[in-house]
Image 1 (cartoon, helix red, strand yellow):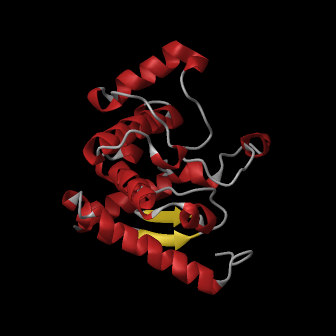
Image 2 (cartoon, one colour):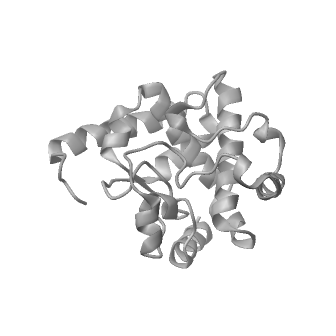
Image 3 (cartoon, one colour):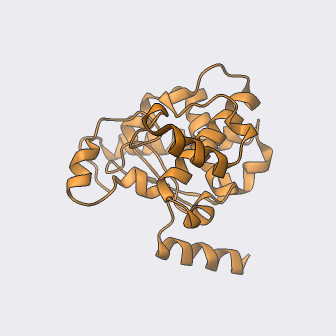
Amino acid sequence: MSTAPGTRSDHREIRARILNGLRLVTAPFPHLSGLAAAVRLEIDERVSTMGVFASGRLPANPAFSARLSTEDLVFVLAHELLHLALRTHDRARSSATLEFNYAHDYIINDMLRHALGLTAIPAGGLDMQGARLKSAEEIVLEMRRNGTSMQTRTQVWEGPSRSSRCWARRGRRPPAARAMHSTPRASARSGTLRRRA
């Protein structure tokens, strides 16, 4: 874990704030309490925002996390936990992983907006009215049909700017984008955790 430019003290404060946010998620969403207790939070400046691996690892950028209001932080954390609940990582294997992740982002954000009575998606998150009423497969097809008319970005949340072209030149996705997707190793760990439960 890198400590520059933040200090270890700053990271401890952010960590405590995010852990408190995970506790606050369980008030409106008690069904997420098991996942909120199970995720392993990592403060990591290499990711631009926040994401979750199938294994339950939750890397969070300290600057992104610090600038969110408490309500927005709860929204973002609930969003990440819902990726685990909906098994986005496992289900994305049969289609284009990034497209499927975006489809779930639209669905999850619309579900949370509806459940919390919000008019806008916090943190500049992906937004599609009525997505909660569609399947991820329907949204993927709609995204493909509409091409560039759909909202497309290299990350779900608006975080500290990182050029996706820089990562693309290296033939890699940014760490935050990878976090949203299963890797064979993470899938194996996730399967092991399910078998142990």
